[in-house]
Image (cartoon, rainbow, N blue to C red; front, side, top):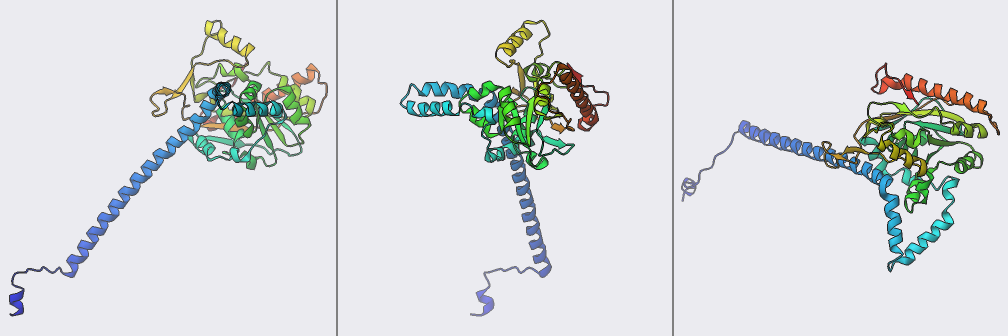
Length: 373
């Protein structure tokens, strides 16, 4: 049989060199396009995951702030009535022996302060810390933090975590954020707070840190406290300071320098129902403030899944904490009222100057005035 006969039933088409190159180029282009589409989808999903991780990081702290202490107290009491009562008894015994630890500065953990969750927390808003002057490790400091806001999210992130690298910006300085002493009576919550370097805002604690803990300590006091939180609302820059002089007296007794700080944007992250003076709502808030130490606020942020709904997640608004120039304070063991008034006036003037110098950098108009009550 001839070769032509054997191949009579088969038709084979051969491509020329130019046709083959075109087919390869076309296929390569399609693959490249598909890969680009795949990477863009992966990046989009990654971006969404990052944002959700940020939301979760913020929400875990908000819930810890609001309910962790009460929830753990209830669980501890309930556990006493179960077969696991021994665990509750052991923890209760630990509480008794460890009761005064918060008054001595607590038990900070660099591991906790460096958790990745705090970087997600920082990036959600975002939050940043601005240094304007160096601090000496041979001195102790009292930082006045303004404004309080609803939860003081900026001051917490900047001084109770390493998300904004406070230890690198102020080397040799140990920050202690001072908060309500009642928080340290709550099981589990007290451990969480102490791990971040948070301590009770009372005279015993501050006296200890400024006199028996060496130098390089920075006590951060949210001077306006609960009263200031009642005026926290977007678009308003108000501080409660005129009659708050206790921190100045402490600074004089220990010779600790005063440092004004202002968190631009702190009041923007939650919306609050503001009760007028003389209303029943404000009366209830003031009674809580007087007898319990905090004022209940009716506020809301965004929802967990959507920014178009209401919830406990704060709005994603930039917060910038600016640390001002230290005011040198002499040591006066028994300061007179005249001494206190003098340095209090100097502090108020320094705070207003700090606000005016930086306000336009962070979205406020030149005409914006800091209201000092």
